[in-house]
Image (cartoon, rainbow, N blue to C red; front, side):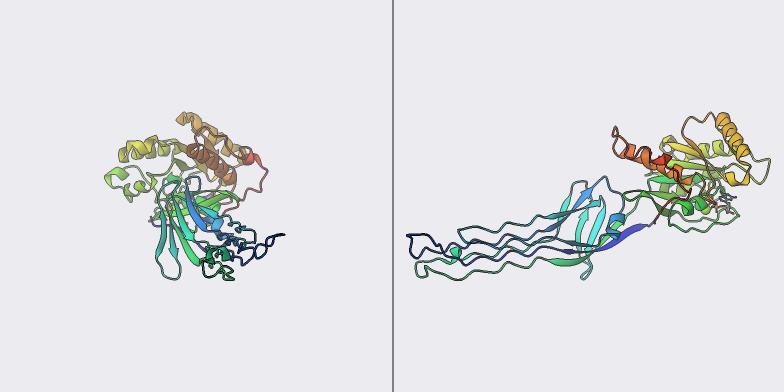
Length: 361
Ligand SMILES: Nc1nc2c(ncn2[C@@H]2O[C@H](COP(=O)(O)OP(=O)(O)OP(=O)(O)O)[C@@H](O)[C@H]2O)c(=O)[nH]1
Ligand SMILES: [Mg+2]
């Protein structure tokens, strides 16, 4: 499942300050020597890998990063102040290339790893440095160096945080379309999805997660039925599975409880660890039923399955219930990313929304 998050940015390091050519002027000290200080260095720009980030989405908004120049040197031996560096936080796994040459500038594989992207210019030398036995009143000084400037390409291999699991036609692809900018094909025949799709779900300005839509799974997949179960490997590095089930099956003889159990059994056959991952029940196609009937069926299914984990009743086709679901998912992922921490915006899920999640891919 190849999916890259990309961003293009420009980094401009600060210029160094100029050195100063100055002479001491003091009462009763005729011809005070040179006292011009050095220029300060310009600010550099660094990238820092941060495990708390999972997409490059922030870099699609701000694209130019400019560090300040160093101050010029002054008289009285005063060196100019160096400018502050800028540190750009990027997700672990981000590869940074020079857009012009294609050369890899940084490959930040570990949390806390840091790389220099653009070096600030060195400060120039003040005339104090040019004093010698033969030249006691040098007027030379040097200018500060220019800071580096580069166009960079950021690229991140995305791993899904959340996997969608469900029988064909459960509405997995419809769901990912509802909550992200991903646009996989949706159709009313089984096995529409043949390859996994990833979508970035953005719950607000700074919080997002990645969801994987995979082909439908059927009973007997372990023995090769349907498309088999090999694509379940795409769910192995996720933290949470959303198990979609059609709450209003076209064929009245279909038992959603049996479908859910059948898929749980297939998961276990594929990999016991995958079967142990947190799995939430998402009952889809609520729009096909009268609201009271939908709630009644949902409650009955939860009871029949003795479902103790979170469950949701949604209609992926019109976004109903999807926003609440994505907020809960986000909160749960934040708990796994920072165990023990208070969830940020923990009440955000209760916002009266229009039911249409704000998303971006
Ligand atoms: N009424 C209604 N129809 C839905 C809903 N969600 C999906 N559908 C329909 O169900 C059919 C299957 O939807 P898909 O999203 O392709 O299902 P899938 O789970 O991705 O299916 P596969 O890719 O074959 O595994 C399509 O005709 C959708 O329009 C829903 O909430 N309400
Ligand atoms: Mg699909």
